[in-house]
Length: 130
Image 1 (cartoon, rainbow, N blue to C red):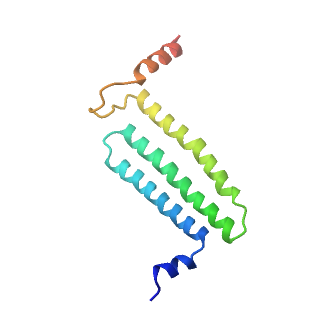
Image 2 (cartoon, rainbow, N blue to C red; image 1 turned 120 degrees about the horizontal axis):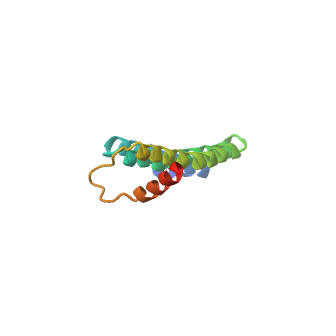
Image 3 (cartoon, one colour; image 1 turned 90 degrees about the horizontal axis):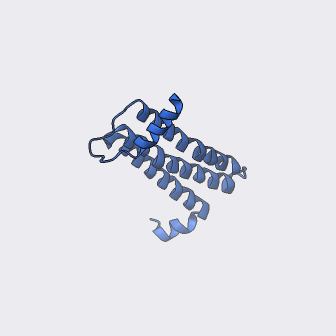
């Protein structure tokens, strides 16, 4: 039977880093999925789908960049380019979904006390009408 020390010395640093990044990414994606299933209203669900999932997928892509650069002598800029695209598009998409829901009067949960976007929306709507 092999000991933990023998296993750790036989594993390369890149394999260990890849495994840790994959586990962290999977945990973040799972946290986002649980948030989507458990939160009460649309706005909380959009936030839960956007933030942890984006970071989770970026972490998985970072793991693929580490693996490709260490084992396959591939260019690792492709996953980095995908991470950049992910961070540019997902926050904008979640913002547009939340804004569209707000404009179409999707109501937030009863537990929210204030509406920070009400004044801004009224000013934008007034300017659009004029």
